[in-house]
View 1: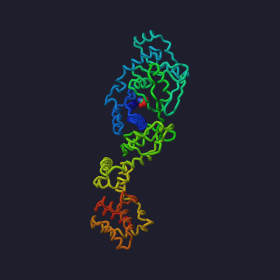
View 2: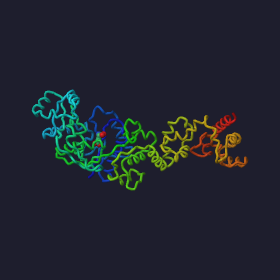
View 3: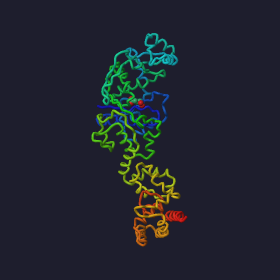
View 4: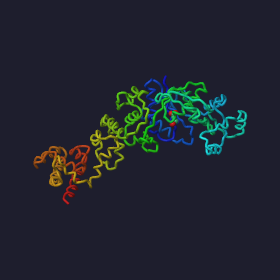
Amino acid sequence: MVRTRFAPSPTGYLHIGGLRTALYAYLYAKKNDGKFILRIEDTDLERYVEGAVDIIRRTLKDAGITYDEGPDVGGDYGPYVQTERKEIYQKYAKQLVDSGDAYYCFCTKERLEKIHADGAVKYDKHCLKLSREEAEKRIAAGEKYVIRQNIPETGSDTYTDLVFGDITVDYKELEDNVLIKSDGMPTYNFANVIDDHLMGINYVIRGIEYLSSTPKYNLLYRALGWEIPKYIHLQPIMRDERHKLSKRDGDASYEDFIKKGYLGEAIVNYIALLGWSSKDDTEKFTLEQLKERFDIEGLSKSPSVFDENKMRWLNSLYIRELDVDTFHAKALPFYEKVDYLKGYDLRFLSELLHSRCEVLADVGRLTEFLTEFDSFDLELFVNKKWKTDCALARELIPSLKEVVKKGEENLAVNLENLAADKGLKKGQVLWIFRIAITGAQSTPGGATEMAHLLGEKKCLERLEKVYARLSK
Ligand code: GLU
């Protein structure tokens, strides 16, 4: 059975790149009726951020990426939090020391700095020559130590990555990395092997930064007599051609995009395309469809550039699929952030905005005319198609006020009659009326809808203001 995992370090919010790794691992497991596991890699105590595990769990849940086993849901291979597995790593580290595949190292920070200052590019195996007795004596005396992997000095490893093909790395390019740190905690270099094996992970899906260190891990698998999993390394997501999208880019987290008014489904859909494409180039996929369609052949060998405009476009398709009530419910928190919308008929606004929003936060952008009215450009009255201008606007406004005063019920008909009375086209009157009450060239609805939104009192106020400006 296929078993994949997502193994984030709880160092802050869940970056889009991390979420994509989780998504691919999830999709690959589900496509193959397998299991998807969440494992928290929290052994780097200095980078641990309080609350980060909650963010990871919340984000995965919200995005629909459900794990079959993990810290809160349990499973047969737990614990799923690395700091709770300390003894397990200790045990296997000892086994590797026994077999000569690892060794105790007592080198001080000062010595390591010195050898590097003297030109060493990697650790010089200084402590490998210590006898086991001597090392154990020093440990018993309370000396600080780490356990390092003993990488062969010659030879190489070739393994097959399912995306990149055969990868060969000479052992001389690898360093005797620390497996167990002086605080007793394992490093990633060690814990990933132990856990992936003990948790039965047979497809390891992770970032490309691990591609060239994988031979180190393969040495550990072999030393422990374990089967090496299949590897799938993923290219990074880029901000532009040269820079990776990074946590520092501020809005690169799932939650930030939700705050900007993206729908979870659209984010998931978009990030699925950042490094994978379907055979027929379809771009809109629900999570269910992705589960069926996802395949390793579609994974990209080159990095993908994050394109927020494309995500906006996809999001607009998802928004359009919502019925107005659902849209309204989702838009409410966004209306609440826009002060000037207080007092307006928001349900009515939702009817108008539903098909016009690309992201929910557009409810602000699309209604700016409600605040920016006083200073609008009177040249908007000049319209070639309708042959309207400021003079005609000034002439019409008093009659428009009369029409508004007649109430909303027959507004459309009354406007039409006004046009007929004045020998104008309906479109001319509607243009002037809409500009006069909104001050905006494009509005989320026609003249009568805008009049309804504003209500009689505001319409009259606005008509008066415009009239005063036109009369100056
Ligand atoms: N904890 C590692 C990270 O966040 C996981 C890498 C992996 O998937 O093996 O980069």
